[in-house]
Amino acid sequence: MDFLRPASWEEALAAKAEHPTAVPIAGGTDVMVEINFDHRRPEYLLDLNRVGELTEWEVGGESVRLGASVPYTAIMENLRAELPGLALASHTVASPQIRNRGGVGGNLGTASPAGDAHPALLAAGAEVEAESVRGSRMIPIDEFYTGVKRNALAPDELIRAVHIKKADGPQQYSKVGTRNAMVIAVCAFGLALHPQTRTVRTGIGSAAPTPVRAKAAEEFLSAALEEGGFWESGKIITPSIAKQFAELASGGCNPIDDVRGTAKYRRHAVGIMARRTLGWTWEQYRGTARTLEGVA
Amino acid sequence: MRVNFTVNGRRQEADDVWEGESLLYVLRERLGLPGSKNACEQGECGSCTVRLDGVPVCSCLVAAGQVEGREVVTVEGLADYAKQREQSACGTGACGTSLQDAQQWSAKGSDSHTGEGTELSPIQQAFIDAGAVQCGFCTPGLLVAADEMLERTPSPSDEDIREALSGNLCRCTGYEKILDAVRLAAARQGNQEATV
Image (cartoon, rainbow over all chains, first blue to last red; front, side):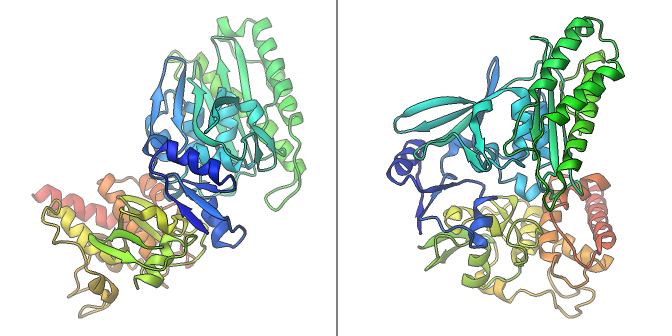
């Protein structure tokens, strides 16, 4: 095994071009587990810790450009107003020790269907900034996840940043697990209200081969809110709309039975989480503060 | 490969390090500092918690090569680290814990039950006084995590404590005494500040 230590982003891209099999390591919270358990013996480890810009973020007018290695702790502490859904999701990641090291770039690189950031990214709307020596491209988050632990990156590409739309309305995140820490999601759900475009977006985690949006549920709810004049009136969403939304969200799953839960349970839980997160976000929207911050 | 980094305030060099090796392995097997415990090797249990550039991390998930040029504090250096923090910072470079001292560090003192005669950090003393140590395996990680929390949050709520220690498992399930110990250390810290 070779340990590659690029001192700059350019050097990192050059190293990845020269050794496309090199495994990038930043927080190490996925990669080191595989190495410790001898599940993986990469020929090259590409350490990104010395590329300082990967731990920086910029808040722009429309979106936040989040460096691939910004640790979850920093997201929780600094970006709660701009990215409430992702901040909530970050808080559910493992433990303080893991949140101090792990970041969204690694979540995307691993592309596990159970990655905690994915539902929040899908719901907020995001693009992955991937780069190689050949150039840079933006991959819409909807096209990024291509299979179980597979993503749209080319072998010579690295994730530089994620561009996440700033919240224009309340966002919520819910995750089912056996305790509040150190839990791989049994399933998870992210919901973002977008009052500016009068749309809602969702993200489902751990209940399909990849993280997915519940598009039928989104379309139904957007239409129902529009037709009922809910955005203007801010009135309480009727139980029948919430129920239908929950059923459609549940129908957006394609889960399996595994050690953490059964497919049936996951479908059920996603429906419950969809209804609850809708209730929470809508209460926030109706509230005079129209607060954009998450609660947990 | 060779890795140069600072451990407990002193420059150290580890040789013949395998590229896939963890910081935990380097600390335990190459530098002879077995205070950080090796249990799950997957970041679940927190018993290998150390400070990396001040931040608590699971040393089993840090690749050895990633610590080149960086600073690590282990439980063996915790007493000195806490003392220096109290005396606010080390300007001379002469402080820290030598490797030999760290290797020989033990909490024996003249009385292993009370910690008398041994230099302990306040959190270590509080763990002894509160009876928060059972088999002791999770203790080093908890000490490092709790000490960092008290540094960041001098008057923690129970929620703060639970959250800060949520990545550390105690399979003796002695959590209540552990919480007592952290509360005790926080209270003593508060009293001390009040009298200054």
